[in-house]
Length: 145
View 1 (tube, helix red, strand yellow):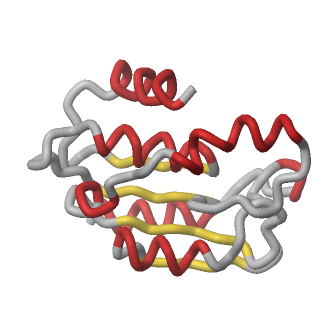
View 2 (tube, rainbow, N blue to C red; view 1 turned 90 degrees about the horizontal axis):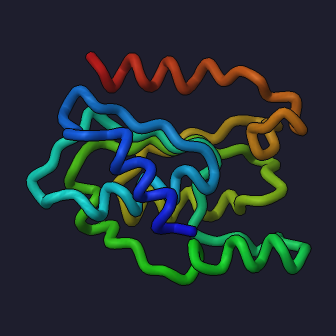
């Protein structure tokens, strides 16, 4: 599963450069990190914004969720490599039912990420009533200055 996500990004993004920005949500953040990991060390990107990213998923309930998450959780990511490509911004919710807020510290430590914590946004999904997230555009505009 990871390989198909990375292959799709590789197909879509031909030559990432300082004008290339990545925005991901949840498992998409994992896919972006793994894509970045495949790039040459001298690659530069305009920046990355992650919404509800994770390194841990302690709240999984169903067996299906655990099976889907397992490779993403157990396959190491070379964060030392990818943090050199660009700046990272991470956006978490203080009541995400899937992603622990404590992961925000891991993103800060491993990727030198700026951490933003939004109040009462759940997993930033339709289920949580979130259909727009203006903070993403605000952070993207700051990055692109």
